[in-house]
Length: 503
Image (cartoon, rainbow, N blue to C red; front, side, top):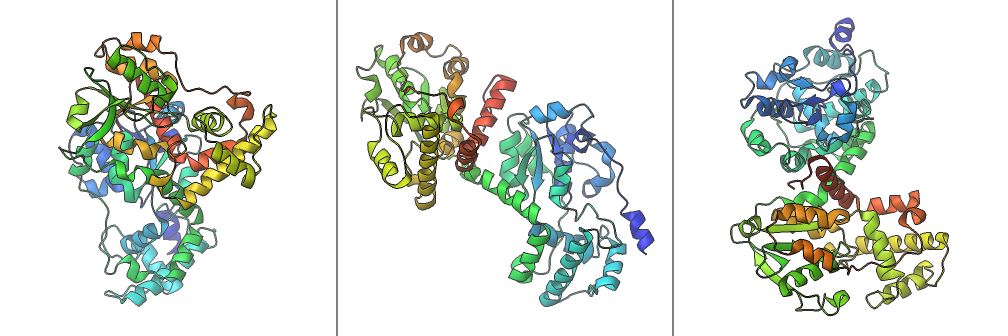
């Protein structure tokens, strides 16, 4: 039997990193299949996207590899630069139970008949039909103990890709820098990722029915106990860490996808008599945008440009998604590092009329902040770490709606704008990109931009590059990971396509 298993589970022929990725004839999309992570379904989705029809042997598509398109050796750089390269990760506990019921205990045509018999003999796995929940739990404990040994090369049976660690599969394409989706969020994450390049992705996902799901006689909650969960998460600890990281990164996007009702509205700054609307986010060109809209509307500058946030100065409208789609409607995103340093110099270290001296005093008293002139670069670095610690504390103790908008994650404030289909622009290219999407529909826009020098910029004694250290960069990334993902997606789309992505 061991000889047969060695032959059955022999190591597949090696491929280059690019060749491990599936792609489409119809779009520059790249997917790394990981077994027991929705790969049957996704391969069928890929087939449908290229052929506008379902595969005739959908549930057995893995045996029809030539019907799918693999990336080629030499495509590595294209994959690294692509915003549409991804893998799907699964909660290792759910993946383990799927493996157990689908391939080990299950007696269907796609199970592992040889390995079932081997495990029955080797570890006493009970293959009797209609087992009790306790018997299934005992089977799972025996099986995960054996997997722990197998994955440590302490059994006679080779590691099989159905139970190989997801992290091991990812290591084989570690130089391609692909994005991680989660299987439990695939229904909304995949359209979000690919919608800009595969407009019919939603249709394909609805049409395709082939997925490798096995009915389970008991729920996960009934079978698992704390000890068993602990064993699974220990054996697959790296998978657990990667899955949790991916889940956390996607978490802020969850609320972007409920369909907007016909009568639902969003509040936008606008300029009457001009088809232009924006959602302006704090520390992302908000002062400039409101002054620009004021100038367009009144054909003159506001008399105190830096105080334009006074209530009642700007025109606002409550608009539906259909109304916004007919006009130039947008919001702006910013590199989180640049935004943080703008906050630091403008509101915290700065002493201007629009600064936050009460925050600076609190930081001086409790976090060693130095609020004096002519600081050294090292003192500014220490101040930045103190401010980041303060923000982290706010994130831990306050609800998101209660966090000050100047350091609240920009994705939180962009959620509704994304749901309503507003186009995302980059702050560093704002004028150029706004002119591009307006396409001549806003009379006097370019002239207004040229006439408006006022931007709320604070002078900096050192550049961001001089102050930024790996520690500060890591702290910013930890606090604003979702902001960074949003910014990179928007920037990549503009760089590659010359237009904003459809979020």
